[in-house]
Length: 306
Ligand SMILES: [Zn+2]
Image (cartoon, rainbow, N blue to C red; front, side, top):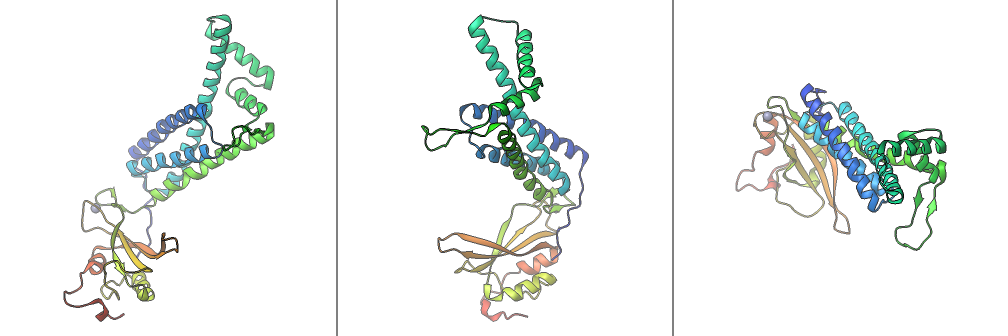
């Protein structure tokens, strides 16, 4: 089997499409996160969800844009994380200004909006030395992030203080970025059919193999010699077993397939655990050799390791 080597190709229209998905989707996710946060904000859980969504959006961008460069995939994931988190903060800033405006209107009746904005800015500058968005972030840190235990609503919250709040914001951003970059990195390194210009299809189970032949199976798979493959596929039997999975192009039948051989065991709790033994690309002939059905009337015990 040959290792997968991503071609690193980034089609320009695909990149534009991916950027559009990441930017538009990221802004919408950030705004949605802000609206949810006005109801309830769960410390650490929220940034994890935002990071997950950022990664998911970047994967869609990579897939639809046919981006086969993992570095570009990573950058898209990080960019999406920044856009999501930045948009949430920006939405918070606008929400804050709207709140101030409303309370002024309630107290003093309708006011000139431009004047209200100016007053807010002056207050921010007086408080932090900075106006606008930066001043708002500084004021938020100055007030301090309040952490309230989720289980007991009567318990006292803990204020992280100004420095603690900045550290907390950085941790949030780090979480969003950390969760966002890996999925698009992996997606861009996935096997691709150069002829049909499309990603290989979903992973499908080819069959199960006898785990007692692990060493022989591995050695044949490594050398790519499937014509004398030491084991035949059989119906699922008891754990542990070896599962063989493949991804092939859905448009053509002649191109290379991706093969993954995994050891499947079951924990005492009944959970299936897949451990990768080997994976890589095989060509049309190797796939045919592998998929060759056993001759009827001959049972698998007759097939001895080569
Ligand atoms: Zn194809």
